[in-house]
Length: 146
Image (cartoon, rainbow, N blue to C red; front, top):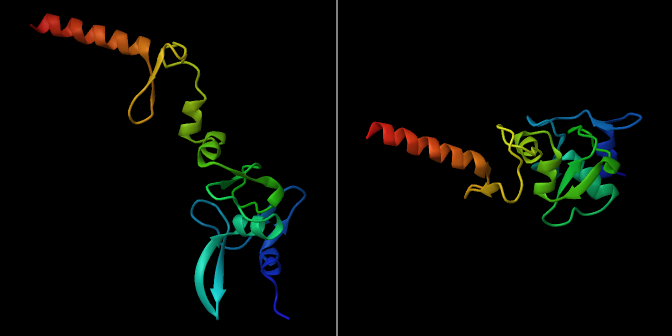
């Protein structure tokens, strides 16, 4: 009898006390990758953590992606994976977007409050107090030139 997909996945997994570490091929981003075959031909490559989740938990809801709660990208333990929106996944991370979203004050110490914050067309937050100061400085410089 041929091995099941789960059997094939488990052969490429080291189960530790906490994480299940993928020891097969890993992408440049650090996620485990698994080749899928049909009739002896490779037809696709899929993220190993997604395959484990689908095999042991069920389908990943449309529009959601799996967040590694353990922060280990090559972990395939379905208990460490949670379906979330892309926004939630990014904001839970440690990248620049998450770091900036967590800031409560601008670089000059003004609080990011609803009254003191505006969001530009690109979706970036800006401090109104600093914008007013910059506008006043610009106006003063232009008066001196004229």
